[in-house]
Image (tube, rainbow, N blue to C red; front, side, top):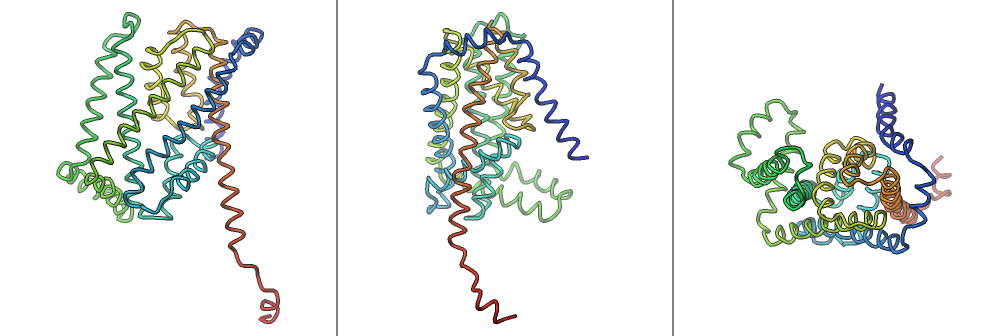
Length: 327
């Protein structure tokens, strides 16, 4: 039953991509591809590497508070391994895999606490960017109350984030849920909650963490703005700022497919229609984004093999004489 559901899910996630590429004129797509400036490939490689480094840096400054011996390169290795598996698993699984790997080296409550804070910070900064973009673009073609809706969501998200740091607020909820949750699961949730609260003592670290989160989303917006420019010869910074963060939020919320395939493409169709760009431009954009994201994910094989080789070298050889003597 589960296998049938998984196959159906993969098929449904591919349908939007199949539909997009079915409509494309491949002669026009090829013309667009060969007219791409060479700088865009160097730019995408550099921005991909920079984005990975900043993602790791953001988690590292939090995690090392309670794991001072954790090296940046070690966390980078775990990040790359988790990115490799999300090439085939739902995008939301990257944080889970990385946290599970880190939990073998330290207190899981602080590690999962840092992961939850990263999720909150990512959501808040994406909403902040989208709201700023919506305030500066032409709103005549937007559905009514779009800006107001995003503003309400942003305020509610920020408010819930701050309230989640208050034990006074969360204590009644914890007691209510505790009646229905198994004791072991309840203890894990309580430990992670305490792990999140523990970071309240390190306000300067949280401030740095928030500014790194802003930097990370700025890299995301600039990368996509210049990718669109390389395809269309037009700058869509305001539009990218307004809509792509929202696309990422919705994709992450419905992240039941590898890299959000299918969910993201449905939204990109509407985004490119708003920009008045062709289906061929959309097809080339999808190819570029997935080519670089998949390649960076597959690089996670390097630390996987490195860990395997190191573990194999550390395993002592079986003493044949000893084994024979015991038989």
